[in-house]
Structures are given as C-alpha cells and as structure tokens.
Image (cartoon, rainbow, N blue to C red; front, side, top):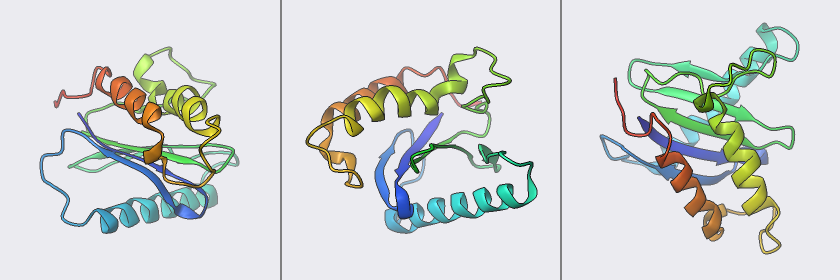
Length: 153
C-alpha cells in the first residue's frame, strides 16, 4: 500500500507532496514534511559516514511504514512511504533483478519528473511542481498501477 510521495529539491525544499491510501489524516502536513526531510538528511549522512564509499541510503522500515528514497546526481530526493511489507523500490545497478516494482522511484524521476517538469519550458527549477499538471496526472496514473498500490499484507 502506498501512502505518500515527496520530491525534495536542493536545500531540503519540498517541491511535491502527494498522498494516497492514508488511514489516519495528517494533523500537520508542514511538520510531517519537515520530519521526513530531516530523517532523510540524517540517515543519508549516517550512511555516508558509516557505510562503504559510494553507498547510499535507500530504505528503512518501522512497524507502521517503510520509507523508500532515491537521490539523484542533480540534488533531487524522491521519497515514497508505503506499507512495511512492500519490497525495496530500487535495486542497485549491480544487483538489478528485473523486478518492475524495484525501479519505481527511478522511473518516476527519469520518465516522469525529468520529461514533464525539468524539460517543461514554463517550469523554473526549484519551484513547486503543482503547476505541472501533466506530471501530476502521469504520476497518479503510474502510482495507481503499481501492484502494491492498495494492497496491504
């Protein structure tokens, strides 16, 4: 089951936040977004200090949800929160299994965000992507076709 999707730009600015299948409504969207951004920053820093060189933080799991992250070379961070039973949504290039749901975040970035936001002549880098209606439409369509969209284990 997919709960939330975020895109953070440089400087931890939230450029996009979408929500699906949420059981409890969010009391404070701004605080939740800051929490996700701070957690992502902290875990990325921890992984870079303790992990192998070039290693990246990709996911963590709690009893309530799982957070999947994808960082781009251009400084964007895509985050998806799901049910804890959902497998990791990206595979490293070395161990790619060919499983379509493991490339979800990479696909959203390369095929949707770059094509319909970054290449959009009306979009200014660092702005909220809510004005990019084609991107949001394609994002919703793509996410809702994932095999784990509304299935909870």
